[in-house]
Length: 366
Image (tube, helix red, strand yellow):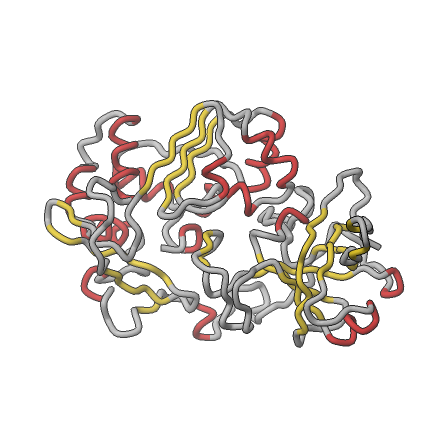
């Protein structure tokens, strides 16, 4: 599922149906807010956060301030990484580190009641069922639900209203529990999850109903931590984006069929007029440097320039590769989401050293 927007997974307790959960399961849920990505990074940097459990993802590569975060990560007392594919975050250890391989969605998940199905939500807020098709290469690999239930059984007091073993034996019982928690959104969840095209979650905006004070769709311009620079200052606005060969921050191949890229993700997309102005041509390599007056140097080198139909003074690159250019303090108000779509950077052309008798002449970037 899509977590925060769907089934109440959030660091903000106001977005979670706490009273309904208390009623269903006979316990008092925590009422304090948790940590956003920015909060977690700040806690790791200052030593307040001592342990980290990751359910998938490539957190250490996806967050801002990579040059500061990697050394601080090694100071963690505990790092637990649950994942389907090895990535950079897994090879930077804390004091005590566990790497737990788990089943991927393409693998057959056999539990006590047989092969299981899971659900997913697409970008149009439609819910789909998904069944694994391949045998796991690891005989004893556990599923994500089994790992989470195992942690719950080990860490929490027994609760007669929650049968962790039954939930893992048959995932349909988890979906029944979701339906009881959100009866309006997940009516007949198990019956409908394999309908062609999935079943849509109720969304007022889909029906052009706007739950705003004036009853209309309102557009706002977000504030930026950076002042908009004059075009003459040579500063570009970088946005980071993903390719079709990745799932969130996990990279499965180096290609991007959407944009015609093959074999490398270390590219920067530029408008042809901007390239001409900078004296760049297709295939040149450049360094990007964040324009931030805070004493921290953030650069990324050996990015190959690609001509692309993008607005002038805007450039684009892939995440998580380019996310190290984001200052930790550069985030959206309210949500604290790192502002990865609006990073002011300068572009420096990398000059290939000339070969002369006796070796190369080292030439620094201009």
